[in-house]
Amino acid sequence: MTYAGTVIQFVSYLLLMVVACGCGTNGNECSKFHPMVDGRNTEYQQLNIKPLVLSEDVNLYVYQNDFYVWISYDYPEGSFGTLDMQIESDRLDSVLNIHVSAQLGEWYVNSSQGMPDHPTSDLWWNMDGWTANSLWANGIDTISYDTPEFNIKNGDIRELQLSKERFGKGEWKIKLRINAIKGADGSFYSIDFPEGESFHSIMVE
Image (tube, rainbow, N blue to C red; front, side):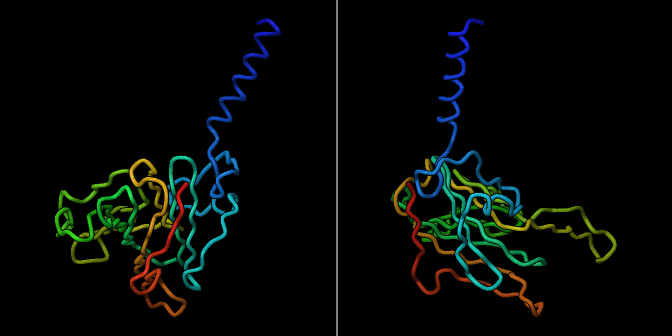
């Protein structure tokens, strides 16, 4: 390869790296990586995301690049940390409920159509433009109970990844209902964020 050819190849590589690199939450900070939806709380500190404290046990993390928004929260060990999140944006026809437990699903808040009414409904796993880490089935216990029961394993953090193509840019309004958080005394409690009828605003660029 000639010297000129080597230079052209190097410049092409640099341009490719610039295009492939996403932008951080502030819109001008280039990041080489983004969170994986794997239930591991490993990337948020590296991305310098300042968490929003929801309780002494739960922190909320929000991050975005050019294409996606991540909305994630941690919880103490032994929690289930299931979620119903209402989201409103200009791209959506109405307020949408996103559900994350052992199953994932979505339905509009003002309509019962599309909402699963039993655990084996075909309406579960209806997701458009988003994903999340669910509670994981970790084998079947045939010894501890009268009937076989699923063992449940959980991640360290609940992670949702939402597409800007589906939900649009501009202001997103969200309301979280996080359930089955295990407190220091061993009892479980829920968090409504924000409390009351208000929504939390996220500016999506």
